[in-house]
Each structure stands twice: as structure tokens, then as C-alpha cells.
Image (spheres, rainbow, N blue to C red):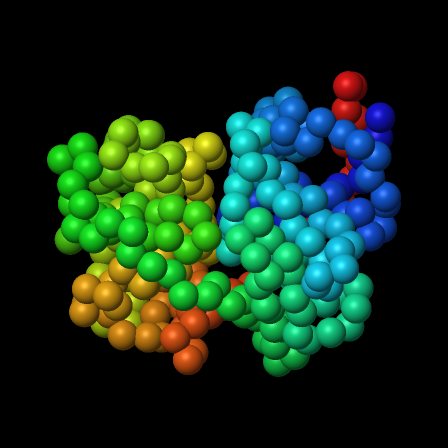
Length: 260
């Protein structure tokens, strides 16, 4: 079976997107397909598989499967990618996208092409929570992020400890893990370990969660520039809603030969 796809990334956080607007999708085993297409050597290579489809509640629906086939509740990077695709289809600068965490709103700047998505209002699930020798904030932004603040993240702590923290028994479910450093009150650096994916170059919900944690702790003030291994985004605070802003890139399109 040949499956048309679009490969996109947001600061290196990359996705294989199946566009059901352009090519109606048959009933497929999407978890298994996600595992196959996300493999870096034998598949296309990606952090996740995204299904973009019509829906009555919004301009489009986004469903995300992680690289291990599990379903992801939300992803700010994927949300910006599909928002850009829908902007191209509908010629709308404001869009609504239905996710597993509810309807999210997006806008596209006609000046610089930045995509801004409303991430809602995160909440602290566990503040100053000890896990595996670290102290961090567990932030719920539609999915869970454990944010650890350090003075130096150059030693790649996410590589050393991310997998262990992801599966920590004190969390209600596996979590995303971030080691973050304050550069100044309006700029931070983060290193990322994504649930079910491992180390990634960027994470939109993670960037927003780190800014929320920093503002809650009094160390940051919006707007905040978030530097990640794959690039940077900005997070603004607008009437208590957190707005994630950044560019996306279409890498290539093609057809994937999937032998079911």
C-alpha cells in the first residue's frame, strides 16, 4: 500500500503527517504504522505520526501517535505544523484545531510566517516534587511535563536521566522531562526528553511548560525566548493564556510503501 505523506518539523521536532483532506485514509492500524514510519533508518524517520482530518467541531482534527505507537494527548510543535497546512488550504489566518486535549486556536502572521497557538492555562500538578534525586515541577498542559531547573545543562542531563524520570513511579503516567536553565528573566535554555520518543530537538508543550514553571517560581517574566537544541520559540502570556510562537518547515512529501 502506498500512503501519501508530508514530512514537517518545528525546530527539529519532526512529524510524518497523513492528510485526510487530500487523500481519504482507509482504516489502518495507525499505532503499528507510526512505529514503522518513525524508524530513522528503515522508515521515514520522525518523532511522531500525525493524522490530519476533517471534523464538524473545528477546522480540522489532529491525532498524534508517538514513535512507539502510543497516542499523545497534545503536541505544540505538531499543532503549529498542521495549523500551517490548514492555513494553506483555507487561506485563513485564524484556525481551530481539535486535539485530544480539546480545541486549540491558532493564528498565522502574514508578516513573518510565525504560527502562534493558544496553549491554554497550564497547571502545577506537583510543585517542588522529588524524583530520582531531582526536585522539579510536574506541569499539566494537556500532557504531563516534569521540569527541573539547573544552573548548567551542558552535561546533557536529559540523556543521562530522562528515561529514568519518564517512568518514575510517583507520576500518574509516563511524563516528558525537561532540564531548564535561566539565562535572564526573558530567556531560557532547555534540554528535552519526550515521553515515548527519547531525546528530541524541540517540544512545544515542553517549552510552554518550562516558561509556566519559571513564571510560577518568580524567575521569569513573559515574553520568554526558549532556546532548544533545534532552534527557538517564544512564549507569551495573553490574558492568562500561554501563546506558543514559532516557525515550521515542510521538509518533503512522498509516498510510503507499507506492507500490512
